[in-house]
Image 1: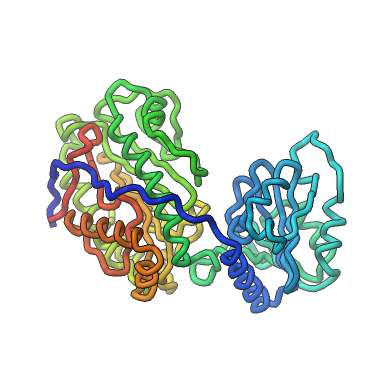
Image 2: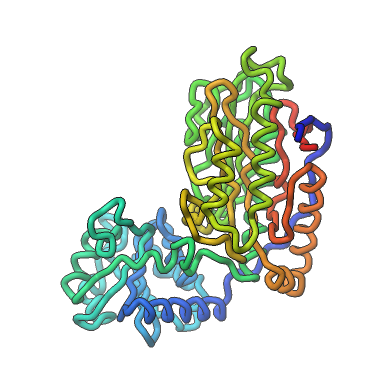
Length: 456
C-alpha cells in the first residue's frame, strides 16, 4: 500500500442530539447484574468507593458521581443500597434517578466532606454498622485490581483508603478486592456497552472531535498553546483526563497548555477527552516536508504510511471472537521499530482507560459491545509521531440491528463515517462502528490541515 496526500475538508456528518441520561430502569438492570456477580463470587456485600478522580465504577452503579468529595455505596443481596455522601455531594445524589425514586438510599456522611466543614450526623462506623452484618465476605470496588505479578496476595490487596479498609476488615471475616467484577476486560460488568449507551458515547466523541477540529484549524505559527486551546471551544462535558498539548520545549506527552509559542518544524500532539471519548492527534507543525528537519523529510512515506497500514490492519481485526493476543502480535509485527510500548488499543468508559483485552498472550476475545479506543502511540527519535486516536464500538449483527431499530440516526451517521473511512483506504469489518467524524482523518502536516493522508 502507498500513502498520498489529498486536499479535502474534514467530514462533518452532523451533530447528534443530546442523548437521554441513564434511566431508572437501566440502573435497576445494572444493580441486578451487580448482585448476580456478587452471588457468583460468594460475596455477602459489595462496598463501592468513589472520589472525583476515581468515580467511574460508582457512577455506573449508582448514577451519581462525587464532585469534590469521597463517597461510598454498600450493596447487599437485597434491599436498597446505602449511598454515603458528604456535605456538598448529598444534594447532588438526587441527580440519580435511582436515588430520586428511593431505589438507592442516600445519607449524609460528613466525614467525606472537605476539611474544616461541619461534621454533623452519623460517623462512618455507625453507617457501616447499619449497612453491614458482622462477619461474612465483603468485596470492595475502587478503581484498580492487582495481579500476582505485582503483589503476593492480590485478592486481598485493597486500593481504597486505609480508613475504610480497616473499618471493613474489623467487621468482616474476609475483605476482598472485587474491582475486577466491574473492570476486567473479559468479564467485567463495564467492559461492554448496551445499545442505549452507544448514543452517549457517540455524543461524547462528537463533542471532543469537534473541539479538536477547531483546535487543529486554529494552529498558526507564533501563537501560544493557550490561544489554541481557547479556539477549541470545549463544550463543558466532564473531562476524562487533563487536556494535553505537547510541543516545543515541552514535548512530553502529558504536558498541558503552558504558554508555549508554536514554532514551525516542531512535532506536536494534543487531545480532548470527555467521559466516553478521547480524541487525539499528533504530527508536525508544518505545511509540508520542507518544514521538517532534513532527516525527517521522508516522514510521509517512512512513518505515516506504515502507521496507517497498521491501523487499517487494526480495524480489520476488530471483530468479535478475535483474540486480544492476536491483535497484539499483529501490531508488534506491523509497528516494529515504531516505539509502541503500551497496549495497541484499550477499553474506554467514564474513565479514559478502563482495561484492555489486548496484551501479549491474551486469549480474551474482542466482544460485541466493547467500546474500543484506537490508542496506538508510535514514537521515533527522528519522525516523532503521528496519531489517529478515536473511539469505536464493536458490534455483532444483533447489536447493529438493535441500534438501527432504537437509534436510527446514530446508525446512519456511523454508516456515513464507515463509508468515509473506506474511501480513505481502511479495511473495515461490519462489526467496527466509528463514533467520531475524525475517524480516518490524519493530517500529517498540521499547518495544512486539509491535506489528509490516504491509503491506496
